Image (cartoon, rainbow, N blue to C red; front, side, top):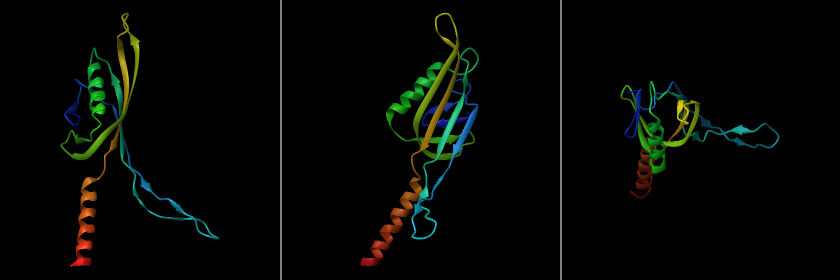
Length: 145
């Protein structure tokens, strides 16, 4: 198994991705200042993204119905746990989009080759949010304690 999203395994028999791209960013909005260049203010991270892309050749590897299974997971509209093939829990992620291409068709229109791009977006850093909330509760308690 290469990776697991919710209960969906990425492996040779389902959707074996060839490329994984992970994108992480940070917000630095400009604050306008009179008579000088704008100052930058760090306001936190952007949502991480992972793009999985590859090619399925159902005669050899992958399964057309697996892309449909991923679409059904996306239809649920729920964050899903993402676990690497090495067992590393990567947090909760949502399916943002699935792009599919088909070519080299049989006479009945069945594709011999399909390409795909699956876009995942991190649901949020729940542990940081919980820690921040607990810190706020502690500060409020100190004010009234």
